[in-house]
Image (cartoon, rainbow, N blue to C red; front, side):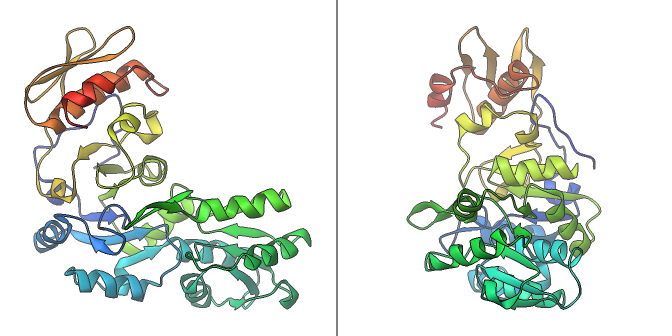
Length: 343
């Protein structure tokens, strides 16, 4: 099935787990948050897998190794092998290996996930700018990463050593809320050096390439909670996507999404894998219909009439907003309409 990006969420007469052969699942905000499984995730993924869908876990978090992530998922009740986990550390390690000599030293600013991925590519992780590195790589190091590590990166970059970043997510969800992500740490080094890193993670092509190489997916469905990484990554890879509302994206952000941030499907959580998706009918003149709702775009705000399931109302609003926004994001006021849906 080809990418479907346009002015309304797509419908599907079949369960998504039947329409696609592989789910490329983000982790934080989709499967778990702060280490705990998100509601309905375990049972939904189990049912999808038992029905024949392959599950692959694709994360921009470069801190943990695939073995560690797989063990965590298994503990949560989702039996997983390390080969089912694809990280931005793996994507950036491949990117570096293609540009430096085999066996080259790489200065690591981050956690064990980066070191394991570099060794997998025949590269040698080092800890100091004085170790004559051929590259600097920066990935999420967790809350305990010493400030001095950023200085070490700056020393090497100032000498002309090329700089790579696993990803540039500014935030990461946790049990207590939203915390600074690797992108915030990358900004520290960027400000200090004036340099620009080569970035591998979602939404950029190196991460999509790594995912397809490792999974062999023929009809992949990207499943995520972030418009600017998961959904844009699917757009760049020309594959379909499912946005779940269990992470950082809310209704306001979804309605204002420009084309590259518009998911193919929208659902509350991972139960959306197990069902078809309702069609959104109508047009800008008569309004967009989904379930018992009709959404229209007025001069200043989005309007919603009717009743029914909140998600159907949101899908109708997406059609109205995305049509009004055209090639850009919609700027119409959606507060009243979303309040009717409890969103």
